[in-house]
Image 1 (cartoon, helix red, strand yellow):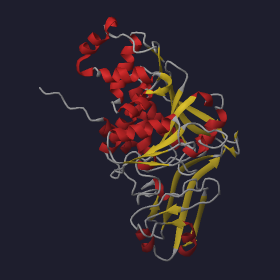
Image 2 (cartoon, one colour):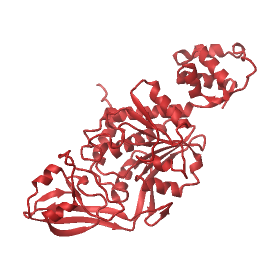
Image 3 (spheres, one colour):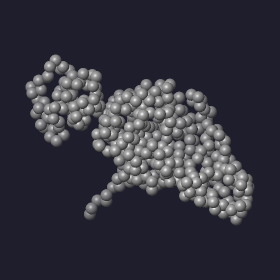
Image 4 (cartoon, helix red, strand yellow):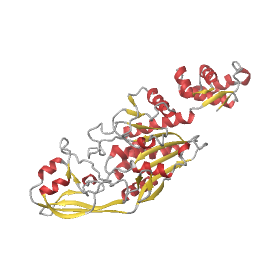
Length: 429
């Protein structure tokens, strides 16, 4: 009897996405909590609540928004716009409203994308009280003159901002931060793809020995990052590398957005990781817009955090519309993104600045039995040249990435050489 083939990680992520897709998320509210509780079934995530009204730098944690129902019905009682059909139908953070409006007045509260007439736009009104509906432009054209019943059954009242956090301790307190926004409703690439890749990456990290401590944040965009930064200033010096993860499920090439400084260790490492497999990719300079990398790179914070995504925000037609759906993202793209981040973790874990402990000329390797050890390693060994390069450039100033770039020898081979030389007390890190 043959064993049943297990679904790939990409297929598993995409399958869970179908459960998450209908949930109406926002910067606060029960949709975020429901999503985080689903993630808790995969990883030991801690859910935090920050009360409305909490001052966070120049901002204040807003009132909590929740939605129960919302629709527009014609004179026959037919729902012509229905939140239950798609969460994007509601202007996110709409204030409560009930009434009967003529079509001309109703249209002032309707949003469409005329050049994409079959897609529903994603619109928000977080910090400016308003109510509204979003719909397909073709459906707008079908609306008949007359009066319409409007129900926006929402609440906006003191509550809390919710975010998820997972810290996986390592051998050192030095941290690697992975941050992803969790505030978008039914959008698969811009939100859910990075959420799920982060969850699966956290699962992987729980299975390996860790030099670094890894912190995962699942936070509402902008206000969530600002809130976390304001309340965790004591932890910030420990963050040595970081990535904001977004848009990891589409078919675009990988893109890395540099840190504000542009030449930090994470910048070098990401450029190396993307170039070593010869896959098409882009490296772009930092600019103060996009996702939460702009919060982590703000002048008073200046954390070493870059951005990692496939297609850039607002660069694909489906962006912030119902076109960003379950068919737009693919299991293959999700898995490829996960594998790239696992490679990044490997490079982070093994990249070191070593110091040659026998620097006065070349140390005698034969008497230590090192050549015999190399031959016993077989295909997982390394060439003598890898060992010579590591010994020569282990002066405390060159890390393994720099040695790989200068020597042209594969990073993994150099890492194995450095590990063996460390075992023989010829290197320290």
